[in-house]
Figure (cartoon, rainbow, N blue to C red):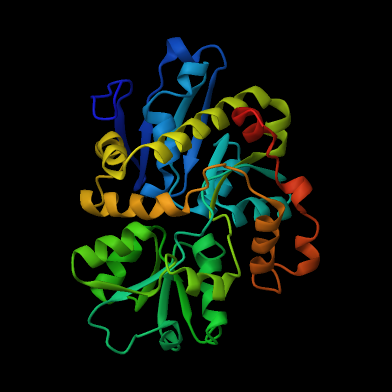
Length: 346
């Protein structure tokens, strides 16, 4: 099957429950009966999750006997809460959420890395804000994030502190990226944390600009000092220990999804995924975003100790936790790359 052929393996259903939109993919019971069924949560809809969408859309999980229900769980904190309550078996959010869950008494383990750079750490504002030229200009202004303590919040705090305005920027939790970008456009907030696709869409539509752009390597390294896993997949330790075969199948599928996005063009990937997952973005913005993500996706899916400890430094010094608290979740217990290594035969 070529990427442009129609794919009718699954039906895409949008459910609304109590004001919450859940994107659900119905599984194939006949194929999924062997290993049962699990729920997989993705914290927000964006092309950076393309390796996961590919695994779901092309049936990589059902082909190995696992029925997977995909949910848009809307934010890192909400995904973390759903995982802790066992409403999700696995989730994909910022890696700091896995660490935070462990420190809250629900040990979690990172099993796969999606990227090498935090691609939702951009800061977006309107073009007509001539008073905003760089991050330092946000002193006394409002910066929207998804939720307090979420990965977007952490990145906003860390970047603002680097520019010397950490105690002068008011961070406002708005729930999800769609609400955040609407608040910037309407002037309700001065700026927001943003994904690459949000930046591209704002530029394409002619109304937005980036105060901090993660694609500018010099600026990124000046603030963060090197690669940091932005998005990862993680499970509760008890789920990992009791259901290793299900974890392995999920990782296998995402490894195949990663290989797919590595070897196909942005246009081909968009053709496969757009109608099912990404219609909230202009098609060209998705293509442009994927072309950027091709430079930031982690094509090995391995989260290294160096990268993990770099994130620990961002979370530490009292930003989210004390250094003493973070020392209780070292790389050796917080990360298990054996599933990725098995999937890749290494």
